Image 1 (cartoon, rainbow, N blue to C red):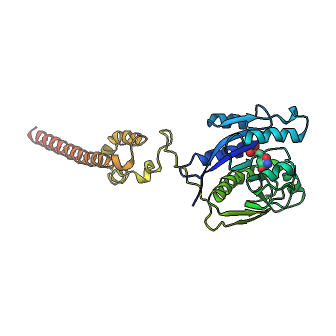
Image 2: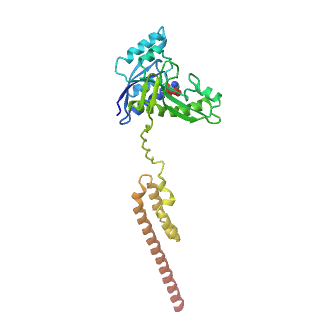
Length: 308
Ligand code: GRF
């Protein structure tokens, strides 16, 4: 049975992981809501993302506090002013003291762009490349006093490719980060994660599967594949009728194809069939008329020659 987790998300910048959490929380039945976003940096993109989603924001600029302890005291006041079940550090670039972390033991998670315990700390992608790794990834873990040391909730892997730069690798890892955070929150809310004194047991036997987004409808500028000539029911009929007289009325058929941009092929198929049938009849009628006229002319010429 899941509970709806009230989240506080702490950021320092771009907020793309925050956005992935906001988007997940907007899905039907997702077991969490973002109640509060706190940034230690003013005017960052993540704050705009939160405001755009109608989420309460707070800025606590760490530089304006004389010490880390006083900064954390302000942070704690904001976090305890309303109910918060889980703190999600999402690109939050401040190291938290053991004192602060212990207050939220088992209720604070972080995202790190490596396969922890490998490559804790900063400049991860550069170090992964310099280390000649074949694989990297990201980790969501509980926060414990040691930097990037807490037990793992979710880990996602990506290959390191030949020619990768820190930027290309970071982009590949970031895609997985955006899947990892919603998954971790889902597992925690569904009590699939048991945390006790710095140790976590994760039951990921029924993993989180995000709902698929509906495919966008084709625009008028992009005709559906069914409008291709091979699928055109008129084409075989026209191909069978070799007479040049029959080819002339093919203009209406082209017009019908142009209308395929706005109609499903199944809707206009009977109309195209009718055009083809009428075209064939018209061709036969024209041929018969020409033969009759030629025959009458020959007879008249013959009679005139006989009489003269
Ligand atoms: C992410 O790569 C995260 O793993 C790291 O900082 C980055 C934050 O990105 N801790 P964003 O602000 O969520 O876009």
